[in-house]
Amino acid sequence: MSGHGSFSALRRLESFIGAGLLMVVWLAFVPMTAQAANIVIYGASGNIGSKIVAEALNRGHTVIGVSRKPESLTIRHPHFKAVQGDVTDVDSMVQIIRGADAVILSVRGNGADNSAEEEVDNKASLTYIAAAGRLGAQAPRVLQVGNQATLYRNGVQGLKSGKYEEGTAFYGRVKAHQLVLDNYSAVPGLKWTVLSPSGSIAAGQRSGEFRIGGEDVLTDSAGKESGISQEDFAVAFIDEVEHPRAIGKRIGIAY
Ligand SMILES: NC(=O)c1ccc[n+]([C@@H]2O[C@H](COP(=O)([O-])OP(=O)(O)OC[C@H]3O[C@@H](n4cnc5c(N)ncnc54)[C@H](OP(=O)(O)O)[C@@H]3O)[C@@H](O)[C@H]2O)c1
Image 1 (spheres, rainbow, N blue to C red):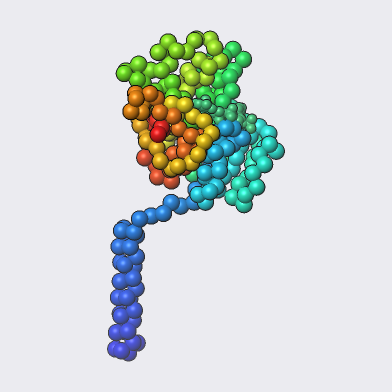
Image 2 (cartoon, rainbow, N blue to C red):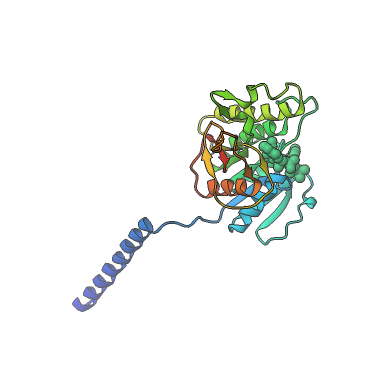
């Protein structure tokens, strides 16, 4: 190689390294937009789950909606697929969630005797824990819908406030949400998040504006529990998928 040739090769190398450095600086300072995630949603046919599906699709994510009757999921979207699955079946969950970035559990159903242990939320969390154990480091994180009665007010948990009668279907469902928190907390290193509505939750509008709390109920200026629309609750779920801030925690969502 001539002296001139080696000089221009050196210049090319210099500009290549320069461009690389520029790219590193650019990546460090330009805010990252969320990557499209692969999200599995159990309860996609439900009141809250269907809003989470819609929010995820609107934000460019790919969604697998799981149902015991997938033909009931009539969503037509290029990034949506319906699959058959039961949230209490570990083998099928392992297959369905393998390769996903996040799995969302928005299911409900009382067992025969209204016991919390038989409630589908409790069983779903145990199924996920078993599936995650089989998938190891490849397991997607889990986000589950919680219940406001597991939150605290003046140091007293809603469940123990005397408002809920033991033995009823409602008590069994709420207690199951506490078991979910206990189940997840007992597994070191598990990537879980429970999002509880802080007060009432109902179909409404999407505003994208809400507060995020911790273990305590969020109240309004009159001291009343603040509610949330299902649409904004769904925003909170997909925000947490895109920007994980509450791994290994329960958070409360309210206006
Ligand atoms: N709605 C409320 O006011 C409210 C308030 C606080 C907390 N929450 C909590 O929010 C969550 C969702 O409630 P929701 O009102 O949206 O429920 P929902 O409308 O009654 O829907 C229940 C969902 O659970 C799914 N499901 C039940 N058993 C299943 C199983 N074995 N395998 C797979 N999927 C199963 C159903 O799917 P398929 O039938 O399609 O299989 C359905 O999509 C629950 O944890 C609930 O306790 C709800």
